[in-house]
Length: 76
Image (cartoon, rainbow, N blue to C red; front, side, top):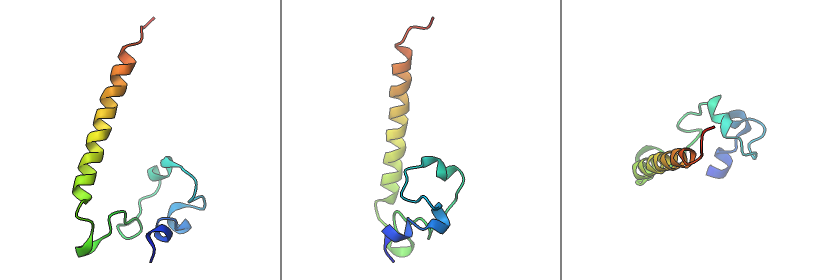
């Protein structure tokens, strides 16, 4: 099965699968085989751990940068 089709299943992700709605992840919890961004089983992506660590690092650095931007404005 195609990953494109798998990740656009209306039974899992809702009828508006083509819409960008990050909040949908607050209400759904797909199983490992319903959302397989890195594949699964013995042949899953070797870079999965690196990608997750790198995404966490980027998110942390962005959070720090946003906090610094907010501190530069004067409080009235």
